[in-house]
Image 1 (cartoon, protein in one colour):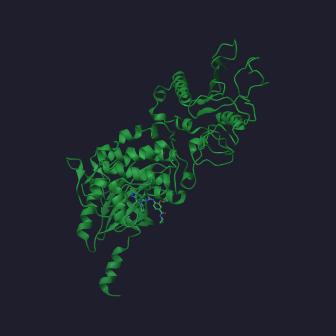
Image 2 (cartoon, protein in one colour):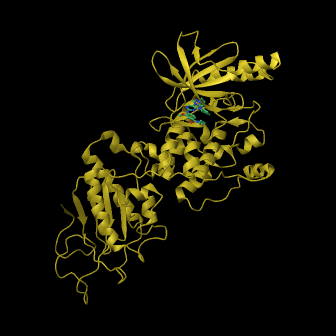
Image 3 (cartoon, protein in one colour):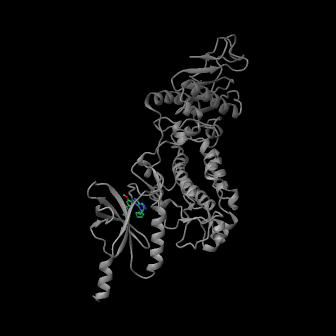
Length: 481
Ligand code: 9ZP
């Protein structure tokens, strides 16, 4: 082999043991975990503490080394000053004759791109969970006047606890006083905003556009503007032209449309984004189980309540087996696995979803963070808020109709019915729950009966029922048990 060639090849080898001359720490290089255009990444162990890191190695030599050196130096200068739980931690950097080394936070569950590869799509509660972390990390970046410029699922790393971390700041840049950065983009960012395509510079709002593309992609399985040839894709981006994701919930579709506004000023800020109905009106899990990397998570009730609500669910289910005249088209039938965990919350553990009405389902309120009851934490206040919210939900739907003979089973769960109240000609009135709202993880289960009566079954097992207009006779309501 030619000596020059041999020298170059040996230069590319990364030693098994690496010493950071600044800190004196000695690391052992582990297996290769990935390769980039200019870098190789390894697992890395600190020999004295056994702490595990991800190592990014960039060769110093080779063609274009000056440009690459400038790029790596910028990345180090920018990233090493950042400290936030949703930004990959930058632990150390050092160099030897051949390489620059960056010691970064190790994320044992790889990235959101890996999850998507297996799952294809995510559920809306998962998207809310991931976005809560991403928005927090991105808000911090933007506060430091840094735009990421390459937000995509493969740059969202997941640690052992499924916490999401924004990484790879190789294309990140500081914005100028006008809030824009005009530096030429190297690489091909996936989710370019129209102003970037038109070379009007990248601002924080261009990162928000990328969030819209990501939300669309993780919920539908396809990027919004994908088209061949590339010129057509760019045209679609400029026109804000994408296939309407009709299979998604109205709040998801409306938020995507807000994020993908062609005019950057019309896109929501990060704070406004979290106030959108998609986040404030839907359930957001506090954490995700690791198995959600390969299968949709099921959010279950804590055991005693689980049993209670399952029982209620089964009772309601007996009235709503197809053909059920009262459920919307969107409701799942028994035996069908609902892919939407808000549904699963309402389903029993055997996987039979309860009958639901999409409008009520959308009203399922469950974002604990914005709820003042959380801050105060008093049971009385929680109950008050719960009652108000459940009543709001029930009030929002259409009024229950009279039962039809299609409903075979009489409701087994009904309010106290004094004798003699059956309509003339009927031995026993058929009573069913055309509307219900499952807020049981937090407060309880609210229902409206076909006779206009309604009630709430609270988490603590107490039951409050309101008599129907006209009443159940002389009995004064509401009744509590
Ligand atoms: N990769 C298969 C090809 C072998 C993996 O198995 C794998 C495993 C990982 O952890 C178990 C992992 C990446 C790939 N984890 C990880 N990757 C990071 C990373 C943190 N953790 N980062 C921290 N900052 N930036 C990222 C980045 C560079 C170190 N990566 C990956 C991007 C591509 C490869 C490594």
